[in-house]
Length: 221
Image (tube, rainbow, N blue to C red; front, side, top):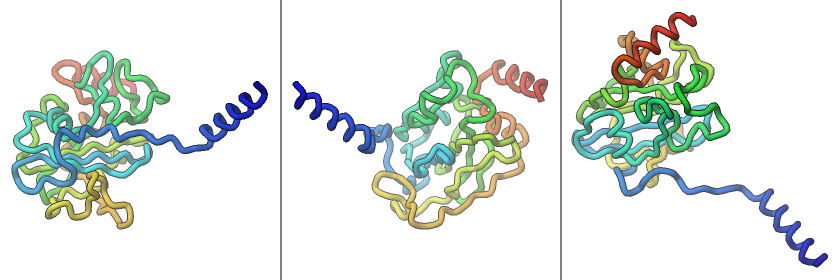
């Protein structure tokens, strides 16, 4: 019995010191890794920033009805809020993790996913409609960028420029941007004032709920 306890103790210690590895949440059965090869598809970029991990680039083939369908058909795992469902995204690829503030209502204004759009070869701009209402441009880019402790003016755009690459150039076979090189910093488009409210404040809602949220946050400021 003493020997058994010693073996179990050693095993527990080894388990505690070993790195925990988990499978990627991306659904490989949907979409394809890397940039869309042409104008028939939407390239989706997810930049985790302070959450850690490399930026993921995947293609949602064909025409997409909304930003939500582009995310889903590119294979990303999504978690909405309990109140609004996938109209308000709380987590992408299980980030931020469950140790962060819960997903009961709205994501906190200090930590949220901002929503961006761009034509191929253009520049990132805040989405002007919610994730269920937006219409991705054929051959264009949909971007999601995590913002922690940022104001509307400093909300970061995805660090991958919205420019299609030939084949999978610049992207690993898993659709993750190379970390050995310098990611091209994209400058946000300043010409979308309502996008700054909807995207930068993570108000990715539909109908009247978006209006209520904007009014509430204006009053609090």
